[in-house]
Length: 72
Image (tube, rainbow, N blue to C red):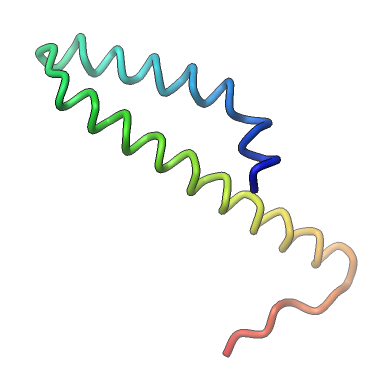
């Protein structure tokens, strides 16, 4: 997970900064609203990295012919 997060870190942080600055400027210059957006986007970036790793592992298992994880 950390490898995927490291690879996308710079681009994500730039996008998060642009969106946060836009929210701050366009929604009444409220630091509270901008900080909530910032925190939600940071959390979403980590969750997205975890999800991407799971999807990549799933695709690799399908390509190599390994059985899928059993669901109980």
